[in-house]
Picture 1 (cartoon, rainbow, N blue to C red):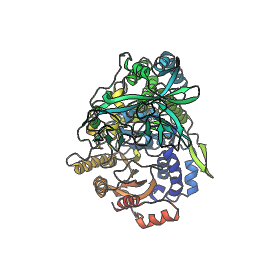
Picture 2 (cartoon, rainbow, N blue to C red):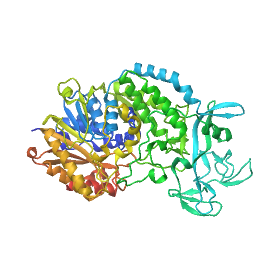
Picture 3 (cartoon, rainbow, N blue to C red):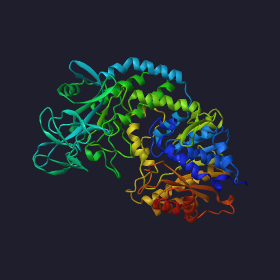
Picture 4 (cartoon, rainbow, N blue to C red):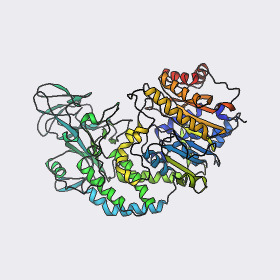
Length: 637
């Protein structure tokens, strides 16, 4: 039985440089919709290539394959598909793909990443939608100054809380800035709210309107606590806020020609919002936000009880107008492209969005992997103007770029610091099905199953060449819990249904009784299924990192109970310059574990931690203590 390069060593130093770049700017296909802790496409591609090259392949052979057209006929399975990177990279290389996930949103996203489309028809449909509804939505986002209407880019809100001691109104401003750069800052008066532009060096602002002095950086909110300016009482925002009922509009960013300007939200702006006509809302999600066995109680702890409350009245109207129009599309395939566009746009059009004051742009929900609750939410222009982030118009353009990439894919190369796109001649144009019979008859080349991988009767035994996956990281984030935010809007319009998927997910919360035993049991069931589906000479490859020894013990027990043997372990950079996919610390390197069926393994030698310390030192790669701990644990199992 021939051994492969992935059982030896791949060009880790060079791949780490690619990973740093791609981790901060993923390829267009992976921006089609938010998914959490995606594996990097360049790393997954490298692992596939190493799984096919012979054991002693040179670096030159490896990179020649990396930047060339691949026409593999292998079959790949990912039992924890998530955002679909493993399937997308496999399909790019011509492989048949099988993806499984309990999360219906993950299945839908992966389907749209893989599927081919007619871009001309989609663009024409967008023109129809724009003609029918754009003006109607844009009228919701205008402000009047001296009898002239201006387009609104962003609307700024703040929580207004009754002081529990003296009952006076406290607005939760962490500071009194709207935007700043190297030279100037837009600030507002702490008393009357009037906006002014002043030199960046000034710390105290004297209001031209009311004469009040404002200490710009000394707000009424800091690290979860509010301070009453009347009686000096400190109190927790979380204990006194009642969701969006406490939000007050206080400022606007608007467009004057090509200039972006700020203004106080005046009487007319507030009146216009308050008097918005009721609209026949479509599918506004009013389901309760689950609160059982939840480690992070946000946004429930801030008074948000159901998903509909995460959107204000104007957002509900605008989103309903768009979704009504999407539901009028008769062609089911085209409708799905607008459904995924709409779903992705939700992250920038809710009341949990923040504003990056130094960058002058909105920060979407799930910028980090959690339900954050900003004390000064920013409301986006839902349809979109020239400026702004995450509007429906801009997200649609992102969808188009994603599918243009799929039709003519490229890999990134850096020569003397300059980025170069190498077009390989590959494409991502899958024919996706959820019907195993159709898949095995050869009528479709990609199978997506919305179910638990603990039972995979639909996948034929010993038919899979490579299992490439990224299993749940023990007590880490429950992505299904976050995905529920999107799913509640579109669940009636996608083919994947699994309303109780949160109870089935292997991302169980570590607050659950007997969590460790449950995790090991479920992971072992999946690995046993993988063993059955993998060909006798097949390879299972997955990435993992964790600081906790018990996490690695759980993984090891699942591996060996399923009768796999680890034939190689090596580190790769996982998430560019940031890493959220760990329970503690800031681990930046994954361990890649290569498994084979135990009866087919001979003369296995794994390199020890001292080898990897020397390797990192010799190649000037950063290896922090948390990375060492994680890699050491992977070598020990």
